[in-house]
Image 1: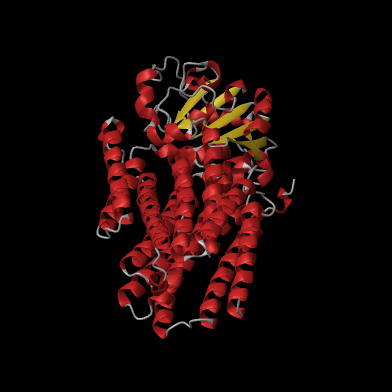
Image 2: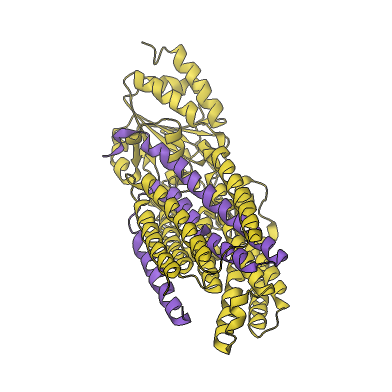
Length: 97
Length: 479
């Protein structure tokens, strides 16, 4: 990918993010924050790339592995915690209106 | 294009689509839980896509597999355990901790690439390409470090492990932070100029900057800061995407970064604070004691739990106003027992939820849902405000500034203009509170001086427990 097209990707991604959440009921602010936070753990892909490309470079493998650990801590913990919060809302079947 | 490239392309596209749908769905109550699962699925999909791409092209060495498995198992395990164990009351700090770790991950990736340039980046050594590489590494380190230390400080402050040091409330902190910021920029440009040793300077000063900026901020504004740091960690992820040349990372990072900014803005609006004053204004209490709010209370009525129970028994309609104090005292279950008794006696009970009650939007909803309070009894501020004049008793539990009538009546008050619950319109107001200390804004609450307000002093949980006892003695809730 050329740098310019990556910039386009960045721009369009930001615009998409701005548009995605307009009206959010206050109830959902915390879960939304926590869910979005889990998604920011997408850096796990960068960590994976690092590990794969490190080949036999042990220090780099270790850095990549630690980085992957931190990212997955964020991702797994984030999604679980969000689910826990949301489960409390959906337990009541009568919350439709 | 060969097959692995096409497959990865399709999977990445699908993952982005699902992530976007996930974030969108998370903003509606009905779809939120499924949306969260959808996002989690999209994330796993993206991992499968990346791994299958490498399997189909360069292959993945055994050594790499070992380190991948070690890292993923440890990270996921700790994440899952913490997520299951942590009490609902400490959600804000948990999110902060997770967020900080995301920032740390981006920081480490950039650091790794900077110290040990990976094979493919050496191939294209033209000036432009290497410049982009240096810039994205520097941004990733800078933002990643600020996210990490900032989040950790935010968590420590919310947990009460860290207090606000006095010097951070004076002008000194601006000077200190400017020094850190300038030093970061020097290191930043030095690094881009090819002086690779300044990378450590960048790591250190941007970490210090993260601490220096977050430390002065009062506990009340922390959720806003966490939301902002959440947005930063998205930016850090996007920067890491430039480092390893991944569009998926850039899109997802940019999406979270932008959505996080919007959410931060929404939260600020709810608290009637601007982002600038949150970030640079310091703790609100430090300034406001000087301007107003130091006024003395003249007409405090204190009453016993027994009187409170008697009034409740005679009521037809009761509104509960929960706040941070309820969360701190972990009294949501006890509160539920009290309201159950009242309901059994035919008393109508409603919970009034201020948008920023509990200092984290949605905090109270989560807490009360945990205690099995029916969703439809939770009323938002605009819905419930017209009901107060027809209400017999309002029970304010650990809330303070969100029920301060100053916000409506006193244009000199720092709270002026903040939307508040009009509890003073009710016939009787009981404020359950540990002492006369001010709320997080440090401002005197005019509500406490009103003739229809009575204070019940004590820890929320203890008072509610006593209340259950008194109600029992009165025969409330027993058929």
